[in-house]
Length: 246
Image 1 (cartoon, rainbow, N blue to C red):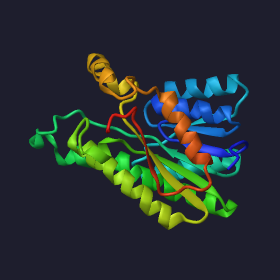
Image 2: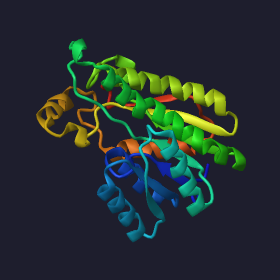
Image 3: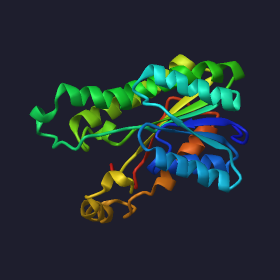
Image 4: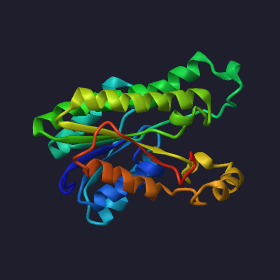
């Protein structure tokens, strides 16, 4: 798929991997809707950068765990740009809880992480799908994690939620074929603000990776853009982890 002239929604598009993806999509000539829930300043800064480079972008607020807000977001994008062709389900949250501390995993933690990380991705895909189908082609990339493969991560519910994202990707690929391709990029450690306060841990990890470096958000964004453009692939979980899981 030629991305130029397409319309994309990037959830959590104002920071980290979402920001890098928004900027790279704009560089490919994509009109970008930068979604945010609370990071309004960062989202608007991302939009301003895109516009300064001659691109087209808007900031759109929505809590992806709330279906009415998601539907309103998609309608706003359609009113502005006419359709939605691409969706990057990047918005995710976590809570840092030791894996063996099962008592700290409250029902509220499960609800919060599943609400954003799993249900939110489904809500966004469902709201955007009719517009993609009407054009006869569309592409969705969900952000998974190696935590969904290994079962380890910042918390047990986070790892389980990312395993669910991988399953959601395969199920949506079946449900939305042949008009819409759905794939998943599953990063390992990435140098984003999630590592804030744990920089020493990140620097300790890097030499033990096969490639001996932590990925940058731009590295993951390049794979996301490639997955959106690749017309012969759907239902795939693509691991990008500097050899972390080998």
